[in-house]
Length: 266
Image (cartoon, rainbow, N blue to C red; front, side):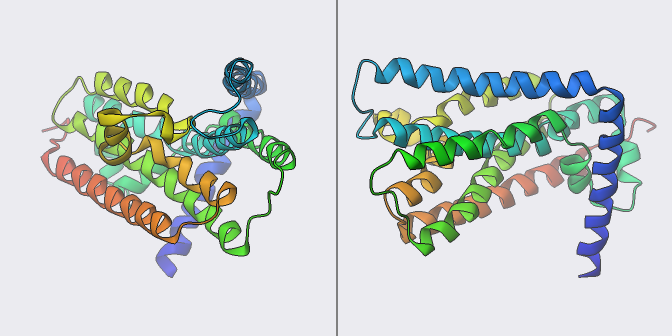
């Protein structure tokens, strides 16, 4: 318990430092919010074009797809605001030797490289998800999820965030073995584009790949489906278990790579 309180205090110091920095560059904060919200608006406009030609997408009605898109926006905004900058800095720390200063600090290297910074512009983008979720829900006839689904939704959203974190941690940990790991990270940004669409639109090997090998197709689909189509305990359980296993695998790879790290002074 004392360790948890200690790390919460450290995280508060991280957030406070970023807040002070943000107040010095208010225009940058505003522009990041506008850009991130603009991307979401373009995302929704794409669906508007699709549904101007069809009545459903793989069995999903228009407002169900909007609800799914807003769920993806919520998950991805939390991920980008809390983790992306930190994880992408891992390869930089390895190349420049800044990892030395991380290792001498009395806290977990993984914690430091997961929570050291936060992106306030992306944090504000999280707020754009909730009005869209409510708007879509109001236009869905018979939308009345049960208590179990309502309780499961935030847990499954957190599971989706953990999946994204773990996948990116696996990729950036390649920097311990290769100085060109940034090219691998580009693959991650390409794959995440598949996350905001109904999983049913994918077929054959692609669906297997996006469901089991790189599970971006289930990250937002599972929590959205719990509210829209009813909670499936087996599916929710598999999603939570997969998230935990993926995190443990990513953590193991990170610390395996860290054991290979050689100080810049050596």
